[in-house]
Image 1 (cartoon, one colour):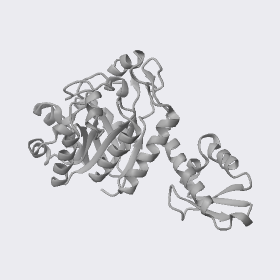
Image 2 (tube, one colour; image 1 turned 90 degrees about the vertical axis):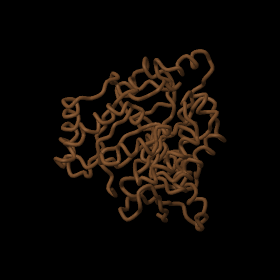
Image 3 (cartoon, rainbow, N blue to C red; image 1 turned 120 degrees about the vertical axis):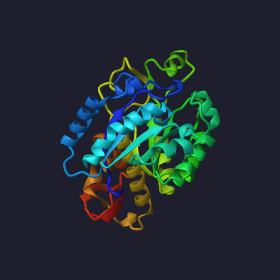
Image 4 (cartoon, rainbow, N blue to C red; image 1 turned 60 degrees about the vertical axis):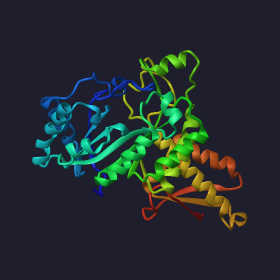
Length: 342
C-alpha cells in the first residue's frame, strides 16, 4: 500500500506478554484494562474511526499494546476472526499488529498468512543484548535479526519500535544499535523515549536513584541523530514520542521522563534548524547580502519556525549580521529548506 493508511487502533494491553518489561505499564499507556475486545467493542471502535475517515484510504485495523503472537492460538484466531467481516464488507482493507521478535516463527506466520495481514511491527527496543537484559525484555538481538529475515521471506511489511533512554544504554550503544536495526532494512520505524510509569519496575529504580531519565533536550538530540541514521538507510520514521492523551499528562501516572505532547514536532524542528544553518554556512554570497529568505513547503513552516518561533530566535543569535524571512513554496519538498537572497 503506497498511500498512508487510516489506522484504527485496538489495544490489547499486556495480552500475550510473558512478563513485564522494566519500563512497561500498558494499562496506563492505553488507559484500558487488560481484556480482549469483543464484537460489540470492536464495532464501536471501528465505526467511530470510520465516521471521521473522510477520503483517507486504505484503512487498516491495528492490534497494539500487547504481544499479539504471544497469545494462545485461540485468542489469536478470535481477534483475527472478529476483524474479517469488516474486510469482507470493504470497511477495512487489512490488519496489522505489534509483537515481540521472539514470537516470529514459521509456524506462527503460517497460522496467520491467510488472514489479510499487511504489516507486522516488532518491539525491538534495542540491538544491545546487555541493554535488553537490564530492561528485562526476555529476547535478544539475534531474535530480531531472525524475525526480520523470516518476515521478509513471507513478504510482510515490517515495522520496528525502538526506544531511547533505556537502562544501561548510552549514546555510543544507542547509535550503534540504531545502525544495526537500520541495516536490517525494515519498512519503517517508531522511536519512543522511555517514560517512568506508575506501577513499572522503572518507578522503583527511579525513586531508588538507580535510574536517571533523559532530559527533553537530550532526548531530542539523540532522536534527531537516530532519524538521520534511519533516513540514510532509507527507513521511514513514522512516529517519534508517545501519543498525547489525558493519561500522559497525569503526573501521578507518568512520573518522569522527556514527555512532550508534540515530541516529533520538536525533533523535526531541530532537523530543519540544522539544515538551515548548514546551508547558510555554505552560502557563497553570505559576505555581500544581509537579507536571507528561508523557502519551505507550507506544511514545513511551523517546523522551521520551531516551538514559539524558537528557531528564528536562534538564527538571529547565530547570524546577527543577517535578517531572515520565510517564503512558502509548494514546489519545495516537505521537510527541506532552500535559501534565496531577499
